[in-house]
Image (cartoon, rainbow, N blue to C red; front, top):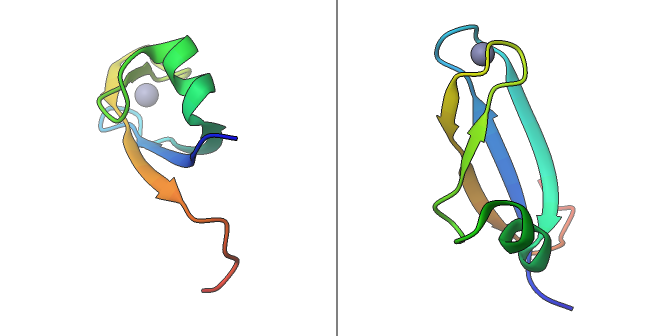
Length: 61
Ligand SMILES: [Zn+2]
């Protein structure tokens, strides 16, 4: 099992936000290099730079 990441996006144009969790393998398959990945906003299709953070698996808050 590879590392897990949490991907947060926030669109400056339409203001929508999204969070998703993926493994390193899934990110590489879909987007290429971690952590410098680019996504498209699904509302307005603007290119976003995603904020990718390692997920250590803990549920502490
Ligand atoms: Zn947008």
